[in-house]
Length: 112
Image (cartoon, rainbow, N blue to C red):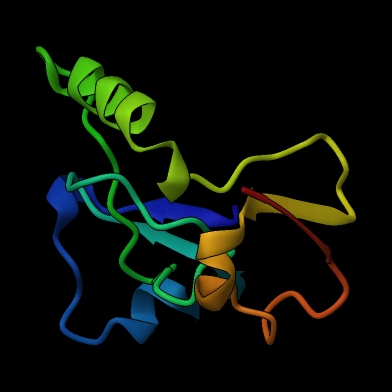
């Protein structure tokens, strides 16, 4: 497993227990810990992305439609994949938010 969706979104008092540890001789490590709900998550390429408290949109009622409409109206807030695993593409205005330390080998492709 690389990610963990906590039951009912209840975090342990010691968050490190959700991230990694061992139980009965089996070790585990989770790269992402998902909250039960929240707004759209920051891009993993963004400095503001917290993979240990990753919000997720619940697809109930009108929630999904709200977020699809939101990003249609705010395309400048979106990091997009261009299909090249060696590059990340995003609006030039988001350049200061890109976390170069986490992704030193990625080619940056920006646009206006």
